[in-house]
Structure formats: C-alpha cells, structure tokens
Image (cartoon, rainbow, N blue to C red; front, side):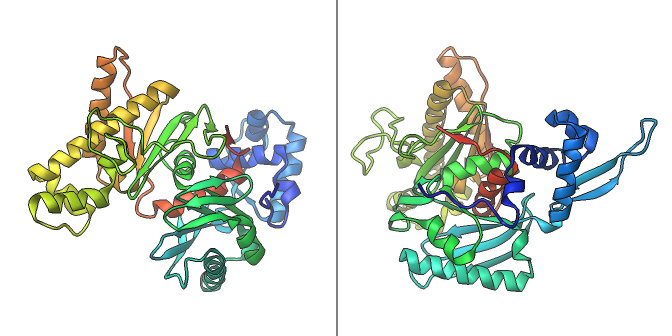
Length: 395
C-alpha cells in the first residue's frame, strides 16, 4: 500500500506521539509554559523540556515571553513559530487552478492563479509542480518550512493510498495523484474529497473547533457532504460516504437526471436552476448571485426556487441528523455564500420538522466561515490535520 510521506526534515521527531501531543496543545492554546504542557499532556517536565529543545532547534517553536510568577522564577511561555510554518493549498477546476502558500492559522501569504495547458493528469500535475516552484521563488518562502501540500478534489478519493478513483469534473480515473506530485516537488502531499476536507477544515480553521460531530455540505455543480461523527470522518468502505445528492427528499418532486424524483441535487444544482429560470421567465441570469438577489428582493419565481431548496435541504439535514446524532450543520460552496438569512430559514424549517417528528431538538445550521478562499483553506486543513493531531480516523 502506498502511503504519503510525512516528513520535511525531521519526520521521526515530529510524528512521535509525545511531540504530536505538544504540537496539538500549542496549536489549540496558542501559547503555553512547560508546566501547562506537562499538565495537559500528562508527561513529565523533563520529557517536555527535551521535546521543546528539539522543536526550538528545528525552528518549529519559539520563546514568546515570560509568564507571571507564582512565587518562583517566571516561566517561559512558548508558541508555534507561525512565521516559519506554512502549507500549500491547491484548487483544481476545469477552467483554471490556484496555488497558495498559507500559514497554519489560515493566513494566505502568496497566491498564483494559472490556466491549465491540459487536463490530462500527468501533464497537469507537472504544471502544478512548475507553478509551485515559481510561487516559492516569488514569495521567498523556504521550502523546508512547508509542512505539506493539500489538494481537495470533487470525486471518490482513497486518502490513505493517495489515489483519485474518479472525478467527473476533471474527467480523471485511477490517478495516483499523491505519488506523482510528491515525486516532482519533494514535499508531502495529502488528498481528500472536497466535502470531507471541508469538514476537516471547519474543525481546524472554521466554526467547528470544539465540535465532535458535524456535517459539512458543499453544493454547486454537485452535492457532497463531509460527515464527522464523534471525531471520526465517515468515508465508507469505498470512500463514497456523503454522496447525498441523489437521496430522494421530496415526495412526487422534480424529476432528476438519475431517474428518480425529488433528489436533493435537483433543488440545489444551480446551473439547472438558472436554465429553469430563463425558461420560465424568458430572462437570462449571469450567475447564481443574481438568482439569490432576485429571490430575496421579492421575485416570485426566484423565491420559489429558494423555498424549494430550503425544504429539500431541511429534510435531508433532518434525516442525517436523526441518523447520526450530529451537533452542527455547515453549508459551504455557493449556497453557503448566500448569507445568514438563508441559513436562518433552513434552521427554522429543520426545527419545525423535528417538532412534527416529536424530536424536539434544535439543530444549528451555519454558513461556512472560511470565506472567498474556502477551497484553498479546505486543502490546507488536510495538512494541518496530519501534522497537529493524530489524523481524524476514517471509518
């Protein structure tokens, strides 16, 4: 079985359980004294001191300041060296690709957008490697301080083996993405389905930092869901968990191209909604944002589409929540960009359905907080998850 490399210059040090524990605490608590690290990790202060010395030598942590004294010497407070710890996030679309150098707290330091010469896998991966070299030169970021490269791609992914089994958007099948790219850039590479990666990124960089069970729903050209249950990413035997687009949620609903009626994707697939709007009104819309603006501005046809989307979403969310007992629902992708007004309406409808089912439980539905560069941050979340915690387990 192929496994991605987990190293830059000091793999054995950084991947030991004790060191991972220290890195995780420093990441989450921002800064800590030796005593605090020993208390939280339940290691001896001697062990903590040895780890700290090694991490300082490697440039991964620094002395931040002196803490308050409790009667003795003032303790030294340590933090991660954010100025020397970077990730690379890659977004691949059919039209263009984006590469960014991103700090481990989500700050984008440099970004490069380019058009692909070819969508053929080996050709595009070679171009990615060349574009990354250009970005490194332009940004003057030292390669040794890049923890890894993350790719979040819509499709069926084997994260452990680094293989993309199938991506309809890219037209790729059985591509050893990680192996091919690592051989060219000599950095560890991590790959995951974009919806699964979105759930991971929300835990590390978004609004789900203290949440153990959530659903991240990403919708645009397709509908995918990343599900984390009790700290475990549910990926399934064939990596196909979260493919909820073709769950029939509306009785006697719209006909779907898959052959069923009332599928969730039928109500959320925006390219089709724009075509339907033009057919029904005779007016063409440039983009999905125009549809949303019209809907919340009182346009009856556009508003009916939004109301149908709310109903379909609410029923799908209720089903998943009751099945897996989740705490939080996060909507990403273009539907997540509509704003709080939309997610408030979805939350209200979910609450109504729960009450009708005699399951009087409030479920919070939120838009993703990752912003305009969400896909890049989602990719970065994969790297952070590998380095600063034992990886979220996949069932």
